[in-house]
Image (cartoon, rainbow, N blue to C red):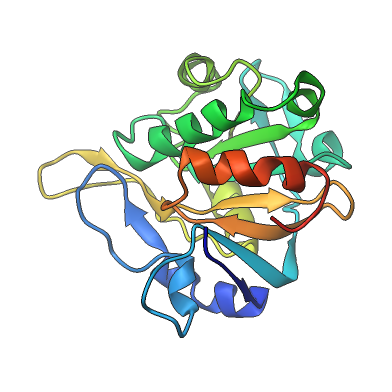
Length: 217
């Protein structure tokens, strides 16, 4: 896997170019990795030299209870992804890849890891719908829903751009959002690695053991 180091500020500046309209078969821009001067290939993982601060985000989990992202994941290796359950391609593939890779870990490391899926389509993704969808991936995955404006603002702080759900040219309701997975260190609670949608099961399998320890992949 190829990896590069980027400044978080540069990624934030490029956030408007990271959108992917899941399920439409089109892409409105390039992944975050496109800020690289090297255009020969997109790395699956990007190590940040200036990590993101974990979003100060309180939403509703799949049990209908309040979930404080910072408090609940403090000191734990955490993967954060913004997507929606009606996405037919990128979102389920990303979560499936993570789920398969997670199962390769020793039980103790699986128990330490937190995987958090925040919906970009809260009107349709109720707590119950999120729970049903994520259960097919991994019963321990955490699903969060709530106010769209709150979710959008939190995503923006970590360089993920999200647009309100809208109908495409075929009349289908889609959610356009950045597709990066952010890994937060258990040592610092900072988001220091981004996985692009190019990341495969093998990429996550190779990197998760080091991420769980707070090391660079």
